[in-house]
Image 1 (tube, rainbow, N blue to C red):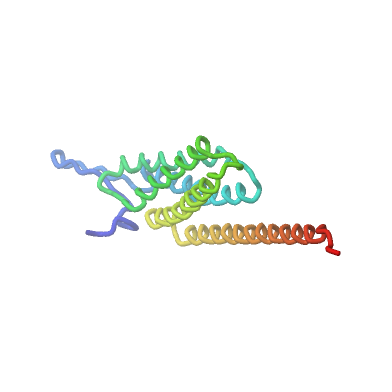
Image 2: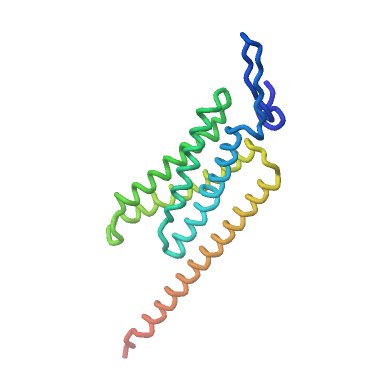
Length: 205
């Protein structure tokens, strides 16, 4: 079995054994290949970049999730389903299974946030928070892994994969810095509050 990547899939075609007619379709002009490129771009931007950026914005700047991310994620998933239907005999099980899992987790996250989120004063809120964080961060990690698998399938060149890795590293560094700043600010606030309470305490005679 030869590899199903690189030069081995540069072109493909159909052979009619009755008529002997061969119809070759070059990869560059193939509609399927164009959808593959669109699928890769949409998913890299939406699942691979906008989702981690959206998580940072939502955590540190209290902004709601933008609708365009959900639109991009759904579009990327839809093109993946179409490609799976059109590419009979060519299967990327790992990439496909992770993609389906991502869509299921993202849908679950939205539904739980809209329908089952308890009030901040509710004692069950802590369990909802843990579920929200675990599903959210798990989706981000799976998204990055699947984007890298997609690069291995499309093989657009090392430049694009390295550029994406650098982008993810930068986003990760920003997330770590903002998280450290948040905890440092919280610690300073609690320290100042404790010092205030100690100063306001009546002195014993």
